[in-house]
Length: 473
Ligand code: FAD
Image (spheres, helix red, strand yellow):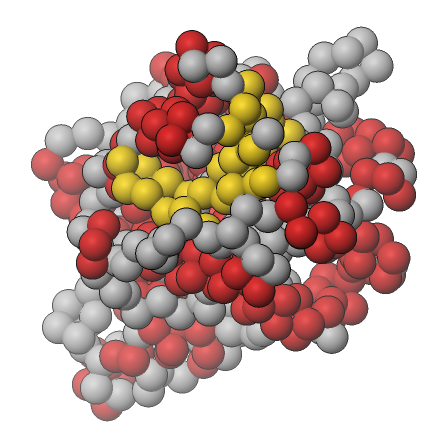
């Protein structure tokens, strides 16, 4: 009997749990991807880098499957309709897929499983995108962790070789069903989307190249990772998001490497799983503070708040590091982690704007957008999350800039209007006297905005905003 493997955020043909299980159990295994209109229709634009990344990654996946006698079936429609339809058409007895932990995805999978069951088809799902999931890492009293460090220690203590062993695919590839006649990966146009200026190369081969490049720099990760102008991080997040790399392979290599750089990097991969299990156990965080008392915070609303929000989105707050960060996001679909923290902190603590508005903006623009990590990051910065930045500790956007972009290299890259400013003053150009502004061709209010808020005053206001809800310190 035949089976169908449904690909989602696991766009690779190696070390793939669902594919491996299906190939080991069935003699004819079909592979499919559905461009789910429930997701596509909700996107803000028809020019979306993520859709572009996925489509190009599917082209490579299809080619690789074809090299092994298989092929990819790609359809457009609601996954809840298309998967049962395809499974019936192909007369398969089982549908194999990998777990997804987002609330909407879990509801979709439950609906698909129910529809398949009505047709007598079994739905089977596997852990694939994480090392440990759901209830695998719990406290001694069998509760989910709400603090990262003890979670990380328990995670590391539990880790055994088998946890990052590869799921074999190649040795069972003879069980791949031949491609359907005339089947090819749907083009972007045919699903109603347009090509974008994708800056991250898509597909497994690009994921592998990025890892190659990063593995030569991983020893410097700890020292270099906080400096946005430096090539210090892995840039693998989009590949991790869409599964064009395997988490087991990355963990295996980082673990084997050891040393401060690799250990710190492994910690980041553990943060990824920390937020995933958090979302699984506390799905209410999607639109609520993790700590319920913080839902009572009175964020700024009204015309002035809307104008300030628009200035933040456009990278026109007058704070160079924040503005450069926001422009990086819109221009490239990526933002460096240090800048995500600075920018999210600025929106919530300097502008007093609800973290949910910033979270949504990031969700629209980030190529690596991931609900669990984005929500976790935003609630961390807003101090509403678990193990978050304490609410009384507020980033100073100028000090952050001086520390993490000391020569203003990153700022100059995204704010060319500030290029001629001296290193010392690029972090706070409003400190330049009018004559100095004219001399460097950067007049505040003409060439670059004046700061839209005063940080010291905003800080006081934020402390009052948080004190008003009487949070436990
Ligand atoms: P590296 O530094 O090389 O880290 C390796 C991998 O570890 C990343 O690719 C990512 O998968 C994981 N990782 C690193 N830091 C975190 C973290 N704090 N939380 C969870 N996973 C982490 N990451 C996303 O993948 N998607 C998001 O939508 C997202 N939104 C964020 C929003 C805010 C406000 C903040 C503060 C952080 C957010 N992050 C998000 C986490 C982090 O900024 C990115 O993962 C990282 O910048 C990606 O670059 P990299 O691959 O070079 O990371």
